[in-house]
Amino acid sequence: MKTIKVGLLGIGTVGAGTFNVLKRNQEEISRRAGHGIEIVMVADLDVARAKELVGTHCEVVSDGNLVVSNPEIDIVVELIGGYGIAKDLVLKAIANGKHVVTANKALLATHGDEIFQAAQNKGVMVAYEAAVAGGIPIIKALREGLTANRIEWIAGIINGTTNFILSEMRDKGLDFDTVLKEAQRLGYAEADPTFDIEGVDAAHKATLMAAIAFGIPVQFDKAHVEGITKLEAVDIRYAEQLGYRIKLLGIAKRTSQGIELRVHPTLIPAKRLIANVEGAMNAVLVQGDAVGATLYYGKGAGAEPTASAVIADLVDIARLADADPAHRVPHLAFQPNAMADTPILPISEVTTSYYLRMHVADKLGVLANVTSILADSTISIDAMLQKEPALGETQTDIIMLTHQTQEKNVEAAIKKIEALTTVVGKVTKIRLEHLS
Image (cartoon, rainbow, N blue to C red):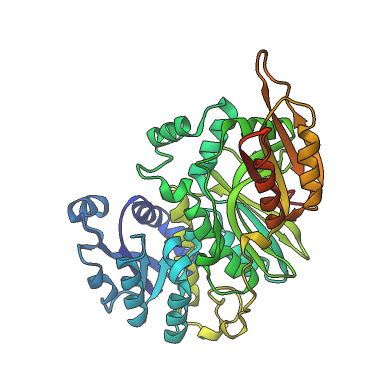
């Protein structure tokens, strides 16, 4: 039984998890793969630390080029992250005829088309299960398990940091800044959490899922991206009173006009299973025309959950390495010559429902003026809360849920509402999805 030799680029949290799980479960993995799979070379800038982690089991170098050019290595696992050196090393590995496994969602969301084309030309595989939702096998589900379906939409909680923050804000009634500091203290948020809290990480993942679901090129630059930094605890509380919870969702949806690709805070009915995903967990809800709704839930990050996905990709490649490239699963599920050019819709053309909160003077006629503006913009109201002003106060909140309408209609109405002398400050707008 031939042993598949693996070179590992980066042995941080996920790299160490991959090394340890592969070593611990070697017998079970080889029984499934039909081959032994062994990490024989590791590249990491911190050579001393890397040697402590791997012992005498493999060679450790500081230069990744030595890994991707090593003729003995069959598969290169890229766990460096980022767009720079990682891209160069992945393309060099492909050029040298090596298969690639990566957890680098940022790299694939921005340069995936180039990388997949290079791999196609060279007859090698690029596997990336660990790039989306950690240990949840959502890529395999979309590429293979649901292949009979016309995927209608995907909605995912695909960033554990933001889900932890939103869960804590709801449970404890705390503001965003307070919970972010706690998340950093507990290790759920990075020292620089920008990619997470601004929605960029989730958008990278949503971009990949959209490409696989709809057979379109990878187009991160066309995704609409909003994070949770402007979300207020009061809106989480009002949403709860109306029977909803707020989650940061990555949404990819097929419509007759084009593809919606967006990440933003979203109200979801509290009775939906995905609305009850708490803490740092991930979940992805997929609607197929034949199967209906399927939900995938689990740990979206961490050393061993992500290692689980990395090693599953290694096993897939071990099984298919000798197969005719034409018989392998395409990188983006659809045959390369059958990709669609369906446009990504600008956010102004998206149709959904909305939560609107406005702080108003407690005077007669305010509500009538607001509803008149909404009606003129063809926006109908589904539910409403009008709060009584606190004792001695002369201002209060009005909260409305709308029926479905286009984003540009809501923006036009908000501009007129904010111009009313009885409306104080800005109108808060949060999109709402029923996911049914």
